[in-house]
Length: 365
Image (tube, rainbow, N blue to C red; front, top):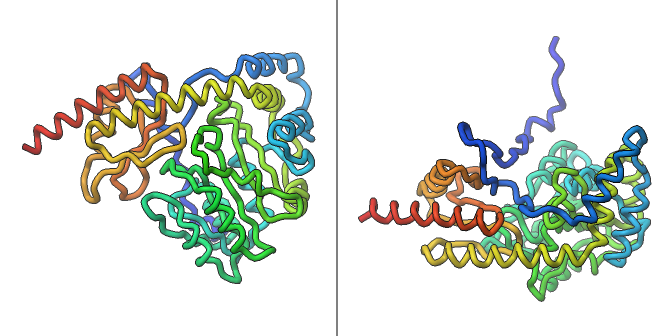
């Protein structure tokens, strides 16, 4: 007799990480995982190293220091905040506290895959809504809600598109939902947004409400290696999460580094400004080559080619030959995502893409 995993997992495709190595290449320019190419705040680095003297001790299971720091910076109730092993774990904890087999979660067609994976793992049904011009269609999401729906999940800015949902759209969507339904907002890339009409969901939060928000230190704060993120959730949800969360789900070094990082908002602002400047120049260079780039409010861009072509495959090959890793979008889409690196890295990247574009133009004449 063989042991079988539960049937709900048969519908779950494993998450595929961005490629990090190229065979035969020692120094890879990695632009495949939306990481920050700059060092984190020096204060975060100092706090990280300060934990060396306590390696034999468990971390603070209450996460008091980080929760207090996040509460101060974002003007949120400390009791409703919890940290996770990346915002991905925070998402998973919330989803697992709400959804059961037979329940439905409504998501947009382009969303962080882990939300779908967590939902399917507990036997919930995932209802995907088509987007318009690579933007979340909140009217379609509201229309998809049924009496089986327990949660609506929205990623803004979205991955892999880079587009965002406006404050008016998010507030409208929340107003359409039944009182007992949770709106889960994944705002992992919120720090990069400079659009005036953006809303991360935090201003919509209330302790007795129906909005939960997840954030991360992996992107703009540059702490991806530490796997640390946080969430704010209504009273009943955060109480349920406390019953499910493991005693020490975040490590001491990550907690210390994240606390110092979130309190260093000046460093964050300077880093984001530099990143956005590089992104704007890279987008301008791509558009000068007549490439279609989806408007982005993140630290990555999505290049969209015509259906049925091989451009995403050949641009990937050209970049890898030069030691540069981007990320083809999964499935049959002829699309290619590139994270934003340093000024030097993006200069090398656009040079390769320019040569690739010129080569294709010659072969098509």
